[in-house]
Length: 422
Image (tube, rainbow, N blue to C red; front, side, top):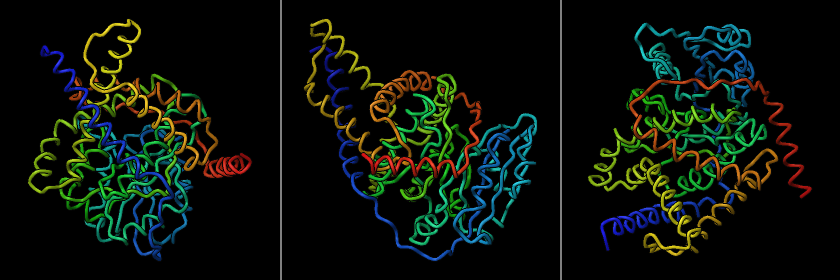
């Protein structure tokens, strides 16, 4: 065998090991998630909303947050009006929320992580003396009314960093928003819920996460990447504190309807992912060896997962080329039936996740097709982001769907009725 042939075999083995790892984890995502022991309201919460020129959507979220099922004297709602030039702050005050206005000085970096850092600085010592936990949201979100009760139960059980279920408030706008929603349903169960059951670390998703205020003081809010959520997750993991998962509280996120807007958003995520990977991978390697920490190893595997996606796609392309040319170019050591079995299992898992978790009526066939295309458009993004990870310009995603929580509830009721009829 030549060096290229040996190298190709090694790549196949690497991809197969990764695939087997994710497959085994996903098996623990089946079934009904258990509820934690219920506790009476005990924890005091600060709800922070990061907003930059969000006058079109901020009113619905502020109204939603002020009406959560939790004692009103045990939480405060603040909107960070970050370099806003519209009526975001004015509308927030009109609907009863409080405002922290932040204007960056010339030359200062801009973006969500810096706005959050500014807000924490404004609270000072009050952050830990007045509040037990902080929950962070994006301005386009809506939140299930049981959110704070669920977070209270998690905190009372000893958890310190919790991510709630990520859902979409506009999955049926078009194939793009459907693909986002489908990826949520699939990952929330096959990865987040499954890892939580196994005791592995979860990942916070940028919105809908809750963090103990003393943990913020211990770790510090020093996240400066384009994916500050991933960076903070890894920083906590390096201190032996894993993120955990709440399957019963939800945040509904607005997803872009245009391919170009989606491309820009996901390029930012991909760059941020590689940036965190480059800066923290060796630290995770050292912790996994020195502390025999399986969670650190799992975190490392997640950080390098984009590389596996690129390699897997390359192997797949070579395989299809061989098939259509009816000619052997390289040596495949893994039978095609195994790859097709894993693919079929993934399709089954997607449908299962939609059936048991979606609160809205979703076309299953369209979901699979859209997600298949959506995932493969990530491949060139990850390649390009690998070489441009140092570019840290925050590009805002425009939000305009001012959907109310009542509309979400209506969609949930219709979906439930549809499931009963079927």
